[in-house]
Image 1 (cartoon, rainbow, N blue to C red):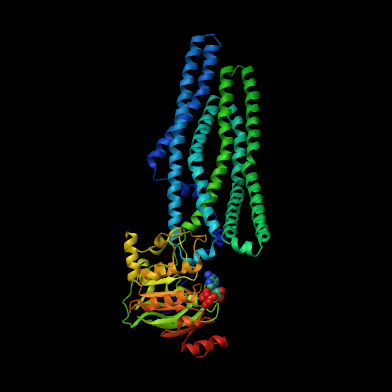
Image 2 (image 1 turned 120 degrees about the vertical axis):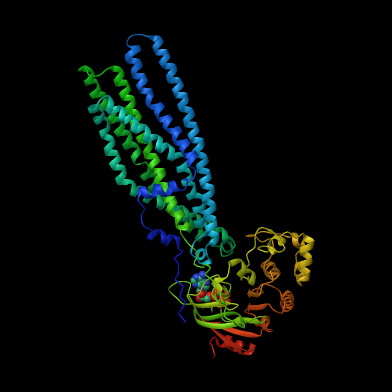
Length: 594
Ligand SMILES: Nc1ncnc2c1ncn2[C@@H]1O[C@H](COP(=O)(O)OP(=O)(O)OP(=O)(O)O)[C@@H](O)[C@H]1O
């Protein structure tokens, strides 16, 4: 049989960020615009509004110049009044178009934000445990919240201003060149220097912004870690340690924020300077042209306004460029998540082997990372209806073995078969129905005991309390439910301590048993439960349907007395221990016997 080797996927986002190829500005812009490309109608309307706005702004100076030369010089005040009213109407229309594009693009930005956050969250839901092992929740939260908002700001504020400013600049540039080509060329020459400077410095600006976003993510991760572990921090009086760590993360953020701020604003004064230089050129050259009779005062006034209309947007473009770089840096961090695929895909089902075993490990090797193999060439079979125990020293590989049984990970090499079929060919819903896993640290959601017991249970999800209580009684779980003061309505807080760890394990136990799995794995599921309740659990386990296979991981050997078979798991090997005494002997010796 060919060896079945799974290639590991790198899920460490920070490492991915380092190796990621640099995207060019144009490619980046294309990618960003694709995010809103489906809103063609709104975008078209917004572009139209902004173009009308720019045209109206561009016509203003022309009318002013014309009014001076035609009416002011000849003291025709009716003409001045007419043009003044015309200008007022134009400015009002410009105000309306500007308002329209802001509203339209605000909507586009918010819708994009909504859709993007949904897709990131959906992607996070699809990714395997390995991904969450390698990335800190705080950093992920920062990507979902903070980085997406950078994109929203770009779309709702900057993109249309960008287009409007470019249109105004192009229009003003054309007017400047049309009125007098030499004066126009002189007035525009400082702009070329600025553009070249901007292009040359933009990779540096993007890098500074990316560093800043990364440190915001790092700080968020730091906060999350200390909030998660606040009890340990207080118990061990390690407040200083965490305060220091936070100070370092905060200082890093401060440093990168200053760097980004400098990069983002370095252009602002330069733009101002160049705009003033252009005005000076126009003024000096224009006065000279008036002196030689080639220019009128009205034209010079228009000309100065066009020069302002050209340089003001250019100055704003500096700020918009920054927003764009920020959005690109944010998008890079978001697309790192979106480009990931689960390394646990469903494969096409082969023909099931006729097998007596419910589950089989065949030549399984496994490693969490390249550095160390945790399971070496493991083969065993679990038969239907039997009880198996996994025992062994701490860190021996019991939880890892159980995680592979439940397909939280795939073997690096070898096969896991469920009912004679590659476990990878099962639909996740079907697999999770067949295999119940009570984790070492049960995770509960904020809600009630009932919400938590019925989590992921389609069968009873619409049942009333009474019906659920009956189902619980029928499954011999009534005595466990009685332990909770307010029964099914007892409140549960996910992170807090409204209930004890033992009680959490009981809820996780009821949750798993009610799903009626074919294979039930209990990983240290009774470690925090008193002996009497433990006996209760043991009775319940014995009363499970005859066909249910049980895999029990336990340090306390009395909990596995009734096991049909005991496996000793140590140093990456899984060996049949024979009797309970043999297992005890192996544990005491801390080494394996064959
Ligand atoms: N997510 C992980 N990434 C890298 N190494 C891991 C990870 N989880 C476990 N390991 C390593 O794999 C080995 C086996 O761990 P495992 O949790 O399977 O042991 P165990 O027998 O269940 O221990 P315990 O009795 O303490 O629960 C240990 O050396 C551990 O350090």
